[in-house]
Image (cartoon, rainbow, N blue to C red; front, side):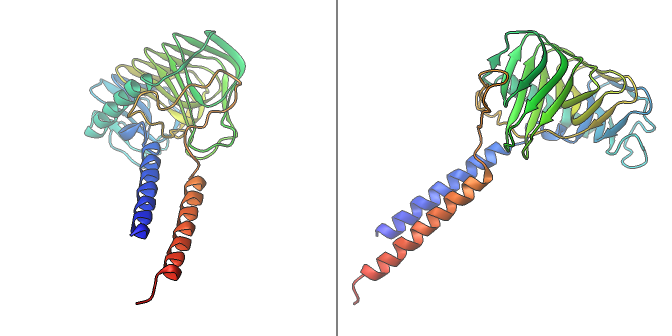
Amino acid sequence: MRLPTFFLAVLVLVLSLFVVSARADTTVLGSAASFAVLGGSAVTNTPTSVITGDVGIYSGTAISGFNSTAGMSTSDPQVSGTVENDTAVAEAAQASLYTAIIGLNALSSYTLSSTTLGAVTFTPGVYSISALTLNGTVTLNAGGQNNVDFIFLVGALTDNANVVLEDPGSNDGVYWVEGSSATVDGSTFVGNVLAYTSITIGPDVTITCGSALANTTAVTLDGDDTITTGCNGSPDISTSGVVEGAPGPGSAPVSTTPEPGTFALFLSGLLAVGLLTFRKSRVSSPSC
């Protein structure tokens, strides 16, 4: 009865691999993933901003500066998604945002030594600092890897830089998690800004892949801004420390998730061994 035991072992290994894969694909933003702009108390926009994604607030005062302010999915040329003004959808998104902020802040991280950075390249990992100012050009180099994340845990963020994502793979994520507030003034920015309090987006800012999500107070767009959702890869926050911090800016990339091709290759090898074992058992079995 060695043959059934072998196939049982193969089945257990394969199922365990797919369980790990499913955990790695958990979307950290949950119900907030579709939102390009989400506020707690208010969302204020100087007209002519263009938002690709949903816009919403929950338990706040108002959404202003858009052509529609409630439940319009296609009639507002400024917003490609739905405007959710104090709705159950916005409530669920805010709950997911809070969970994401808490979960990401629980991850193990590498502490940055400087509060002001410019002309620097980061590799995937988790970084933390009490307050951070970005200047010049900040490059996030994914090294062509899939399922890697750049996570910055910051007390308060001031961005005057051009932040770019270089050599991305698929399903990569970029998160700027603020314990208080964030100000984004650089002309080009990438990533999801998750702030416990407020977010201010300066004039003529383009967030090419990301969002502005504030948990308790307001998101303010100063005009002619462009925000397109994305870069919301899938770091696993179900267990703190799953995504480890890289040794530092400019260091070798950190890969925490096997590539999809690895699973296919491993499965093919197991099936080949299984077929060979099965054939040998047929040959060696005595005839009755």
